[in-house]
Image (cartoon, rainbow, N blue to C red):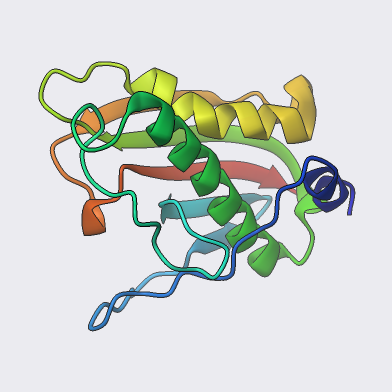
Length: 159
């Protein structure tokens, strides 16, 4: 439980599973394991109780770039919580392979990569460069579900 111990050391706690808005059902798993890989569905930021944070909207308008960076960091914790639920132990993740970050961007906002760094920086801090380094895309989109400022999906190698 090296990764969870590291989270504790830096004062972070994984959130509970997402509380879906009324009437919303998801016909897919948060994590799909196939062979030695885990594919993580798109996640957004969560509060510790699994609810959506109050900071919603477009980055560059209602949400600042620094607030969106923190939302991406929170999204990393949500992804880790789903991986732990699926794998039983985050130490089973041997490498981060690919991350796809989406930013709910106001017209003219072009700093999506800087926002998604909130996710990548935490993964690198926890896993180190060798296992944490990943291929990545970061794009701005017109809208995201529930008005969340960021959504991130990933693919990891596992043992």
